[in-house]
Image (cartoon, rainbow, N blue to C red):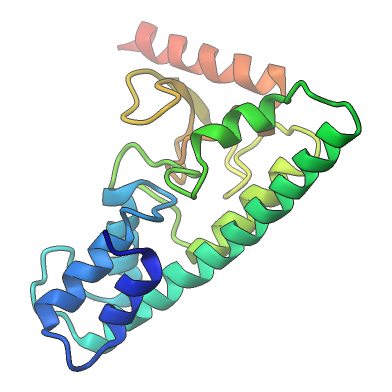
Length: 202
């Protein structure tokens, strides 16, 4: 099975068939897709300027999409390396019980779904790397009450998500499932109440 770097080389290789280059970019998303496969693909296509169903996109646009994906992957891999070093030091110092960030991190190792968007057509507009930087910054500070990606104040609890955890607070503005560790208990409770209000009004 080809790895991310091997697939990226195929995307950039002008001697490869265009269909293979497009296919290789899609396969990259099986290795790294911050919003999930479909939402990340929709995001990359819209930012690079080709349609999700376009079978013959401009090769330069494919490479632009890959560039954005690679930058975001670099940001995330750096964070994961630092995270692993921190946990190693904590274990060495006798701290064996992981915290809520660690519990969340185990579900997202490798970068798949770190900012999951359950609706593949609703996702942040900013570059992927910027979204991940904002998310990482939120994971490294005290919990807050708004979406760490867009500062959206409207969070609602959703069930039956197509990703683990299967329920959680969703930002109604940028579409991400907000990691629970970045929100205060009050913000999580407010998201559940917002869902209850929606059910009552429906």
